[in-house]
Image (cartoon, rainbow, N blue to C red; front, side, top):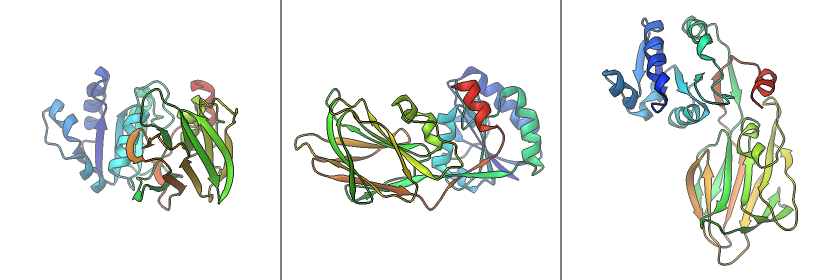
Length: 266
């Protein structure tokens, strides 16, 4: 197997775990992300080259998983959790040895997670595993937005913005905005206003085959479209972003159990 390894280097324990991973996977062909390789004094590759791997092991938190997934969107990932929650990186450090041995012997099944994609200001957006967020491009300024689902106006929002989240992303920013926790087996999206002021609006759930359109309706305000934490586009007044189901789901090696994670981490 050709296995890529990515780690969040700000976490002191990450290098220790990385050395352990290398020892356990000594018989496999390893692709070390360049930053990690430098710390380990080994040869590395650019992050985008991880897409050549058959599998990727991440060491860190859910953000590290998102980074790896953006670099290699079709490669299945196994995440060792050194972060706080770990819904995507769900292998505990004391479980890592068993998980890695099962990975190397092909015993771990692969599961798929829905992603969303779309366009903003004539630009195609990257696929999102967690969410796409429309928020003000000017700090401290509210937005006025019209949200439509399949061509029908669903709500008007005056507030900090709108989150459109996948079931995977329902436990992230959308949850903080008051959205529901969604079982990842469900085929839906969550639409969650961010700090709405007037009128009071609630999050809602739509079928995954919906087309969700978000339009800036206040003439002088601009907005960013942020995909999985990265600025992906800028909207001028009256411009729109359209979001819908991606044809390319994310792939993960199955390890943890969703409802156990919910009980332990939420």
